[in-house]
Image 1 (cartoon, rainbow, N blue to C red):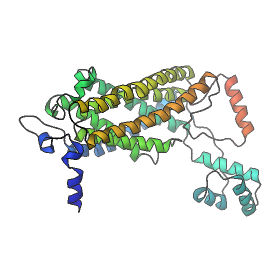
Image 2 (cartoon, rainbow, N blue to C red):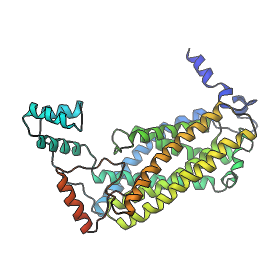
Image 3 (tube, rainbow, N blue to C red):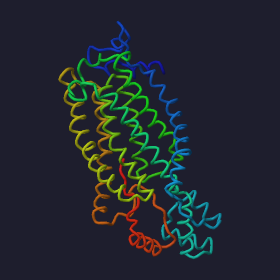
Image 4 (cartoon, one colour):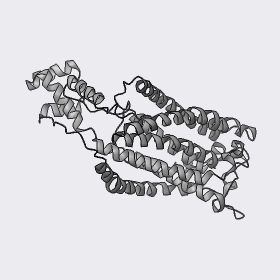
Length: 377
């Protein structure tokens, strides 16, 4: 049974053009091609990146947070109450008005007391400012390193300047022993990073677009794995480089915003917005997806792998449109000075709406400005 499924999954006609088989991509005459087994290294790479991240956040990001005076807000803890705790854990974190009235009867508490209890209990599970700062610092550093690695791997490649070169000689292209080695390490680094993000979902800061992030990471890993196995390596490296460029500024803007360098954060957010729109809404769909939709059929008839790869790229583009909408909404708030937080963040709540209003007024008086102005992927 498993053997039959395996044979079907690796059927040549699914993933390769007509008149090309997997035997054509076996090592021969001094040429070494990409192999599926090489992707197993992504798991140990992800584990190593988790260790590097732990060391980075503890020994670099945390001391930097101390230098910049980044402190967690002092929170009031929720009073122990088994009935409310059980409801919070197993029923709802944000009870409706009818549910609040029902809980009043069970606990003999007032509606106001129960609402305050749930706000404080939700705050207890929200990550502090220092944790957000450490995570943003790590991602900013990684994206910068990955983007530089991508530039070094691509700057002398002809397909960076002429997209038709992406399909020149496909699928029998370069060998690992020559120009493919740098691309292999670039692939391994990116796959290890996104796999590490999936492995760390349980303790990372959760955003409102949590599901979209999971879909993005899975789609990215699927694309990278398929492009490596089927020798779509040239277009794969271009897609990675385009994505990393804007993410550096996004995470950098968050870092400076947490450090209360608001003018620097604002400037980086503006540049990030322009770069995001240019790379994700112009270059990615009209250059890279156009390259994968149009140029291949000029050389060979469409096949399943061709459609599969392009559908996954379209999935990424749909996510780009979703994040572009969030960013556009934040830009609107930014222009009209009404931006109060990251639209994707699970914001900390106050015991009363009036207290929150007071804090926002004080924030504007002291020139602190808006918080968490960087958003999007």
